[in-house]
Amino acid sequence: MTDGWRVRAQAPFDCEKQPARAAGGMVVSNHPLASAAGAEMLAAGGNAIDAAIATLFTLTVVEPMMVGIFGGGMANIRMADGTHVVLDGQSRAPLGARPDLYRPTGLGYETEGRANTHGATAVATPGTLRGWCDALKRFGTMALADVMEPAIRHAKRGFTVTPYLAACLAEALPDLNADPAARTVLTRDGAALQAGERLVMADYAATLEEIAAQGPDALYHGALGAKIITALKAAGSVMDQGDLAAVETITREPLRGQFRGHEIIGPPPPSAGGVHVIQMLNILSGYDLAQMGFGSPDAAHLTAEALKIAFADRAVSTADPAFVDVPVARLISGEYASERRALIDQGKTRAWVAGVSAGAAEAHTTHVSTADRFGNIVSTTQTINALFGARMIIPGTGIIPNNYMALFDPVPGRANSIAPGKRVTTSMAPTIVLQDGKPRYAIGLPGGLRIFGSVMQALLNLLEYGMSLQEAVEAPRLWTQGDVLELEEGFPAETEAALQAKGWQTLRLPHVGGGMCAIRFDADGMEGAACWRADGVALGMGGGLARAGTRFWPDSPAGR
View 1: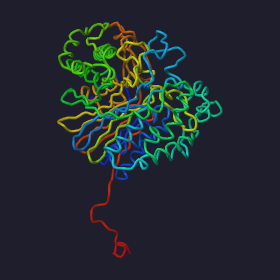
View 2 (view 1 turned 90 degrees about the horizontal axis):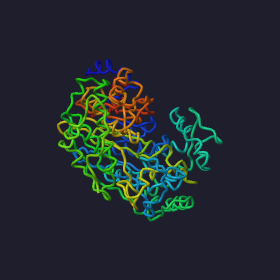
View 3 (view 1 turned 60 degrees about the vertical axis):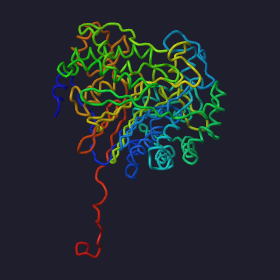
């Protein structure tokens, strides 16, 4: 056992789920049927990319509040030969969008009439379907129709609503009832679906079958896309078919940092995740947090200060690099970390302003981690942004579109203001960790602005505090953007009191961020873990094929 005994002594928590071990492959996602779909691809001889894409398509059915083919995302892929790429399938502002598209209320990114968060006016040009199909074509081994088959099956015949999905449906019920198509599919005559009921998505099954037969061009160039655009424009969207036709997946070089003898590899801008995970770990590398102890007031205080610093810098610097010169090298440098660390007061919290300059994020997302026996790894985070995206269904398609326009600053002239074709800024942090050049961890989670802070804390749990994988994903989290310090209920009362004495205003919450999905690699194979914050399940491939040369001899004495 590692330092888990000491961890629990200082911040008591019990793991609620069990990890899975395997040598032949691993799939970890936030729904058992989705993990099973990925495992089915591995069982059929597919690789980690085949498994990831099958899992994601199935999640669009069984986790419809989180992810869909009309959304955006990032995939961090490492192939067995050491090739390492980030595929950026993020959503973009429509080409007809302008900086003054909305009327700001003056409260954060809020606009009048919720125009950037609800309905067709909130929908950004989607990149997910193109991104998934490009990943499959470049790095997978199976046909699109094959990896989509489990998703089509579950959409057509239905699946059982979990308590988690039921709670999400209840939360969004007023908005879902306001949209006729959403009311028809996602409610029972206006009442929230209950756990244990069956949800059938017949229109969506037909849409998936059309894509399986025709490929992604069914949406980006074909009749399906034309049908969607007609519906969106009729409801006030500025998107047109030219937007869909212009969608492309961008291949980006991942960012790389170092922490405690490990190489941290994450996505670059427009994701803020990789930049600020590395930045925060650089800052915290100057402290012996393990000696302080997980959950101690001093360790929690320093972790929260690193978060405040990251968010101060993020607010002014992180955006689509095609539109803003993001100072990535400065942000992830050891010199900059030393400068910021020197300003931290270990006895008291302080206000922070950005230390860099440059020429809101998803609240409801999903994450998938997969690995195969060949050495290929995928860590990918995908979303339709808010819970049930724009809270509508495009009639006749079953598609729940994103509300990604909510992530742009509605005030013109800022780093993250709206511009035609601009990619959204995201907090996604699908991360792969190497040790001595070999894969050690693949990790990520949903959770909007809380994503990269949660990934950072999980990496601290593993590399600083010496937790097991299951402990690392389930351990209590904290989060702050600069004002209130959110603490999960697992932190001791004495830690909260000590933080308040340091000047923190604290808020207890049931959970910070979403369900984490992680894989650990070692000499004996791999271990998968999912946490209690979602319906996450880790499925591993054990066993294997018969020993070479084995036959059944019915006429042998043993067979008589």
